[in-house]
Amino acid sequence: MIYLDYSATTPVSKEVLDSYVKVTKDYIGNPNSLHSLGQKSHELMVSATKQISDVLAIEEEEIIYTSGSTESNNLALIGYALINQNKGKNIVVSKLEHPSIYGICDHLKSLGFTITYVNNDEQGLIDFEDLKNKVKEDTILVSIVAVNSELGLRQPLKTLRQIIKKQNENTVLHSDMTQAVGKVPVNLHDVDMASITSHKIYGPKGIGMLYKSSKVNLEPIIYGSDNTLRSGTPNLPLIVAFSKALRIAVSGVSKNESVVKLLNDKLSTTIAKYPKIKINKTNYSIPHIFNISLMYIKPETFIHALEKRDIYIGSNTACSKGTMSSTIMAVYNDEKRASTSLRICLSHMTSFDEINKFLYSFDIVYNKLLELGDI
Image 1 (tube, one colour):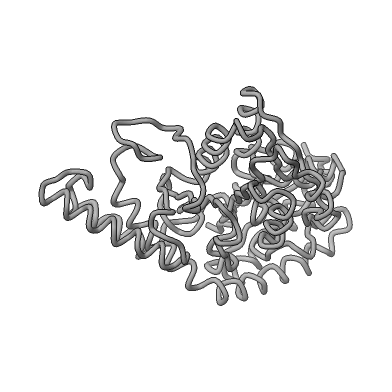
Image 2 (cartoon, rainbow, N blue to C red):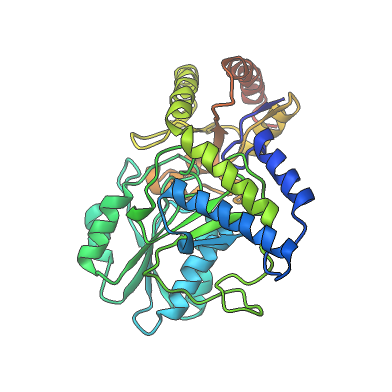
């Protein structure tokens, strides 16, 4: 098997899985219970949270555990909008977000909030002047993805936050950092809130976090028996596994990125030889995501043809399920290009042998489908 869909999800690393199994077996108490088994679990959770706070250079109280980035995005946007609606009802977002952000925005519009979309330039970078003009007196929140999930476009969050605060010091910046953490260096102090998930960094699914600056207040979107922002029994095995995955991912960023860049260069050089294929890449694309448009072949046809050869790639984001790419439209304004894109996602675990085998199969499948007229 050749797996090249790492931006959709990653396999759980052995070290992380071992931690999950050990905690599941040895820590049976509810961390909220008062007895010794519960206290033992609580102490481990506090330790895991401390490790996360150290890795990300934030306070432990600024970590809210969630089921993943989609829930974190919901808590950030809806939670902030609801508690601050008396201050304003305008929210600014980019045209490069994960589909979950747009789903949340649709819900907020139904509640009476207005959504304003900030433009980007031809390289995919947020247009600074447009952002400056879009942040108004009634703008309570801006959400801009740290690294786009389709073209890997990386945004200068620190600069964007400075622009936002200069226009309105009360406007808060949230960033979906799902595709950034573990791939590139991140600084959570460049934003006011950030969404992070475990399954993109070789951890288990079903666990993630929202970083929330201590200066930011949110309305809960899940209610329970306590007064916390996220009620429910803490999933200790997942929390510990996430903590371990995060520590490993962050510590290996520089080394892993250099490996992935070499793999990306190999793909770029080879795919560029196909005259009918467009490479969707700008100066701000990170090397982990390699996006192309086949132009004359349906992406789903190509994906299933490669799957028969035990090779797995993706189309757009995993959540978009093959719809037209809003990101490619935002950057290239080309419907054909946006409707025929494929996403090849690389990892430091990917070998050059796998890339060579992929390119061999790619050539066979591409030429056959091109000849058949994509039947």
